[in-house]
Length: 199
Image (cartoon, rainbow, N blue to C red; front, side, top):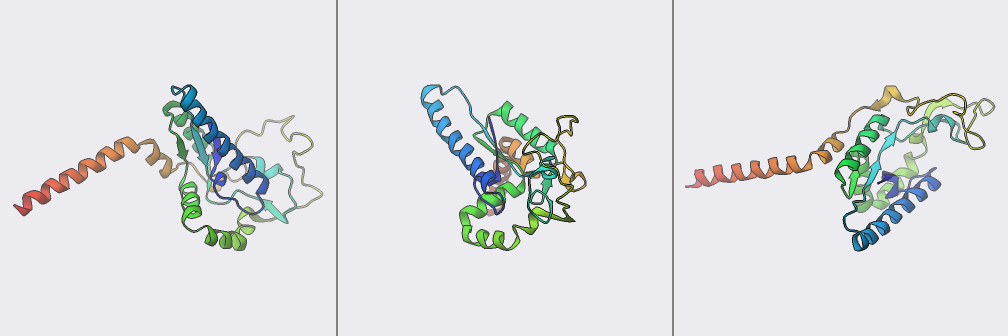
């Protein structure tokens, strides 16, 4: 199981190193999957692509931005990511896209990559910052030493009031077989009803 990001498929400004690492994990996962299919087809390999998650990293990342960093909204609670990872570990899907933003980023990058480039050039900087200015003399990052070496700050960041605790896209992905069966049944019943009316 690998944990990735929507940014494995769509790079954004201010995140070049992060996006490059997620692209690399995606490529590694695809290569490993092909090798496993040849050498040990009984092993399932899943990749969970996450949306923006409210983690503490945005309060101690090294930054040169004028305002406090934030994940690109909409932001999801860490529990959404945990549920998705657990579900993928239990069910072994090839890939699990968590959250509508992940689906939109992937689809937009396939259909309209040039438009996304222009939108991100226009909005990508502001969408990754809050309105709160940073005091560079008071900001302490975790590059040279951990921020939580004395206190465990947990998995949740400072955006709890804005973080979504559920993902409809995850629910749909987790219930895909049942939803597909219900959809087919609905189509069959509608076709049967239409056939009776036409007689």
